[in-house]
Amino acid sequence: TPCLPPAPVGGAAAARPTLPKTAPPPLRTWEALRCGADGSGAAAQLVRACAWERFGETRLASLHASLQLRLYRPPERFGSAADPLPTQHDRLLAACKLALSAYRTGGEAAAVARLVSLRRHCGFGEAESVWRQHALDVLLRGSLLRGEHARASALLGEYRRHLAESDGPTDAAWGAELELLLQEGRLLEAIERADELRNTPPTGRGAGSSAPQVVCQLAEARAHSLGGQPVNALLPALSAVALCEGRGLRGLYSSAAQLLAAAQLEVDPPAALQLLQRVRAHVMHHGSADEVARLQLAFAKCRLASLPPYSKAAPPSAQTLQAHVLPPLQEALEGFGKLRAHTEAAPRYGEIWGA
Image (cartoon, rainbow, N blue to C red; front, side):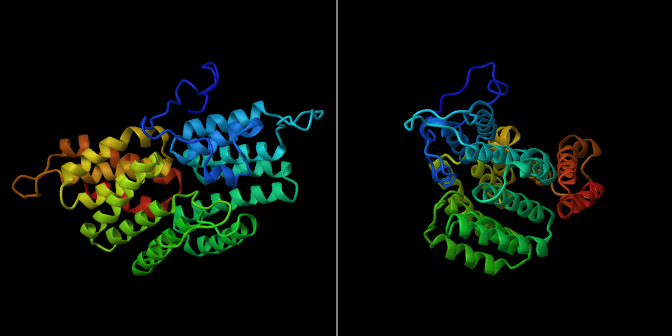
């Protein structure tokens, strides 16, 4: 287990791991190798940040990235050739990790503000390439969140070209590619593409860093749900949950559980509500603002589906709706609104007004 800093360091007391004891995260992952760190010497904190991020512990990831940035500065004079020396490249990677962490809590605007402040430190060459890769990642996520398909398509093409030049063919852009197909309503094409990618072994320096098998299962489940076939979404959603549990991927596990709950909602609303309650603590503690808003929306739908069938003779009381349905709907609306996700926020206005 990575050595945690002493308690006085800011955030250490609140950032406690929630991984099961049977699946401790390794210090070396493909994502860490993609960052160019080997887990030893001055890059150890960066590798720990990458590992914790992969396993869904965002606060610990931010904590170790901060330690890499603040405690490991390039020395003014060089020691012996055997000394592990921190580099400006490692510090830049740590700063970019913190920018992505800001995206999870403050959205695209917060992440872009941090990346803009970093630009003058990047110069050219490899440092500029690292900065550009993270900037494209943030802009692509923001475009997909707002449903800007034309802009997302252009950014996706540029992002894939940049990844191919820096890391070789990698799976880092597979999730964005499938998400764009789903948003454009090309559901059958998304299912076929997910099946194709699932049978394609990822290559390149970052191979496997984005858990491609889980991403493809999630895309297939979403395609069936969006197509009005929640029962067909159960199998890929269950497969995604099993993969996440087996590999300790707590961040993706939350997304998979929400998809599974959405599929179960049509069959067994109480079971769907229990599943959401199991992942609620992790999402509220480590999830992004978008994930929290989607969780609140799923809670509202489950509670609404758990009510007795509507009857003019005995309609649901306003007190019941105000106590169990409207609060999570309102929180989902506020969350989507802060992220400027208007394609998600607009239907929530209608649902609140109808309720």
